[in-house]
Image (cartoon, helix red, strand yellow):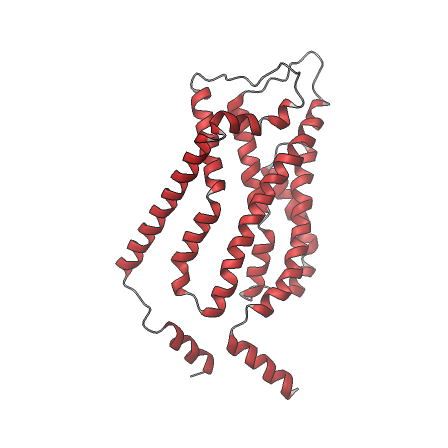
Length: 268
């Protein structure tokens, strides 16, 4: 038996649990997630409140509307359900580190020590990337997108969007950018688990650029600004992932792998 196999058996020996115990642990973690969402939702309901959240996400489009113009509510129940939808989305974002922590606590007992060293930083890094993608939408993409759209709006047309369609469009952009900004995490994990090499990723740059623009065309509204705003950061984050993967593989190696690498270097 190889020395690495002995180390793994020694580290995780006796930690196995029956299937029912895993289900109970999963139930507890899901309950903790619900509690975290409830607390985050309660805090946001107190301040700034559902109306305040709507006013905040409506800032980009109202900047391109007449001073006294407001978003309209076509549906009978839209003034009630749309703010609740926004409140729920904001609660998920506020509680995201807590949700990621619960996911970490569920899988951590089955990880080796060297795996735990990189799993938690990746979760934290992924959360910040998601926040960065959403902030990028709110403070840059929406303003540029509405500026582009307003140029094609006829003077005889009053741009007064429905609040329900506006919120659905904005939330879809939040999700699209939050997920797309996880490109470095995906690249690092692919390299770490030896599914692809750094050299292979470099040779696939052209294919990724084409794929990024295809994904942007599918996930974003049919305007050039939002498509470029998603595709270009994805390409840049791909390069960041390639650079980070080289260092990530070195610091996340198992102790026995590091020893074998050093022995090979000495023998060479």
